[in-house]
Length: 77
Image (cartoon, rainbow, N blue to C red; front, side, top):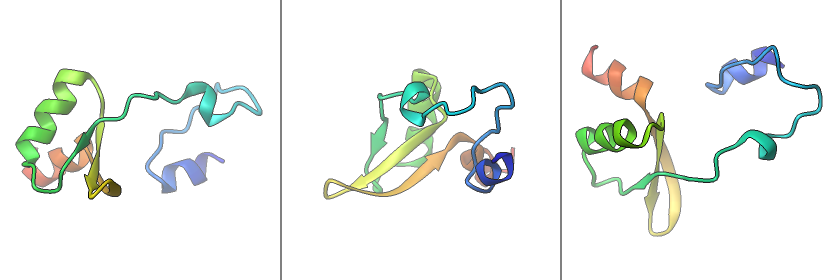
């Protein structure tokens, strides 16, 4: 299971209870931006909110996700 989580970019938690459901630990607040937004705006949004990702929405549908790790890699930091 840990390998599966790493493949999808998640952090494996070895202390989670067996059978724990995603719905029991997920955050229902979702940050969204348009693809026309800037990477700097996305980084500011994540920093100010304490979240590590922003869902990219176009015409009401998700088209991608920006993570703080991807933003750092893109900026070479």
